[in-house]
Amino acid sequence: MLRRLYDWVIRLSEHPRAPAALFGVSFAESSFFPIPPDLMLVPMVLAERLKAWRFALITTIASVLGGLFGYFIGAVLYESVGQPIVEFYGLSTKMETFFSSYQAYGALIVFVAGFTPIPYKVFTIASGVAGLSLPVFIIASLISRGARFFIVAGLLYFFGKPIRAFIEKYLGVLTIVMTLLLISGFVAIKYLF
Image 1: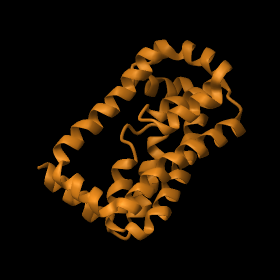
Image 2: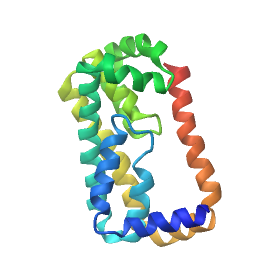
Image 3: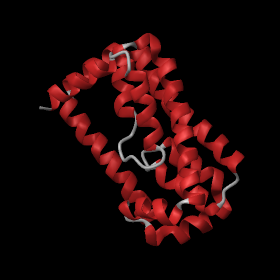
Image 4: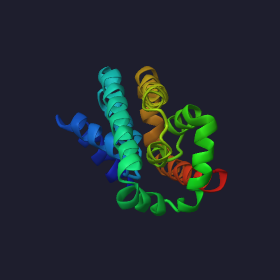
């Protein structure tokens, strides 16, 4: 079943509307959606290696725009929209810690969250709630999200064929590793902040 899903994602990534889907997933992930855009970016670059930089740019722009939407949710719609999202991730009791951390390390926190498997959306919402400077938020998001997605695209561009063969050979193990990284990001938020 995993092989069929992988083959389906590869075929989807070659579809003419794949960049629009990548934009949508990247936008949503930064504000409320739990699945990282890498799951679409990687097969798209593997399918069309020469478009790696374009796909990384689409992912970065959409992710930062989605981050701005998350910021808006935190700043304006926290009680009705943001709080249920934060509660979904089991972090409502950690918001006070977030606020005190934002006072001291706002840009650094956004940068780290944007670059790692830690769920970025929680930090975009918290940035809006905490009133982190919008230019600081945008710059930190552009740098961290851009670095993350361009590094992924660059690795796949330069080492695409061997990486694709590696992914196809060890798909089951890599799926488990990616799932563990995603879960560890949620755990890190819950216990470190």
